[in-house]
Image (spheres, rainbow, N blue to C red):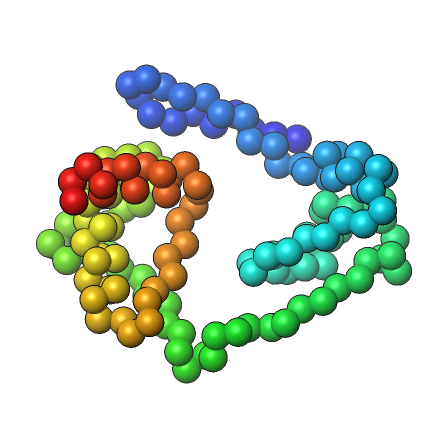
Length: 141
């Protein structure tokens, strides 16, 4: 259960993405006394548990949740169509590799951290993309 994804043109890149992690987790569960999943964005948990551990009986699953630690009044989510220079933001996988998009996203974040007390949290789609952004921003200052 997976997909082969093609991205880029020079050079083109092929990646295999496993869409069914349960077979890997099933082997892990068989060898372990306990498996702990910890994270902040694992919802919806019942569906995740069903997908990762289809052979584990629900009475063997113990869940603990702390709820949100950030008060709803201190939280805002924004969607931007354009960056500070007026460039349309398009962070689709095929478009986000351009320096213009990376630079514009950098300007958005730089402006946000200047005005938001206590900092910001920015979610990006992958560790790889974070690395690409950081590399670009370090090279351009």
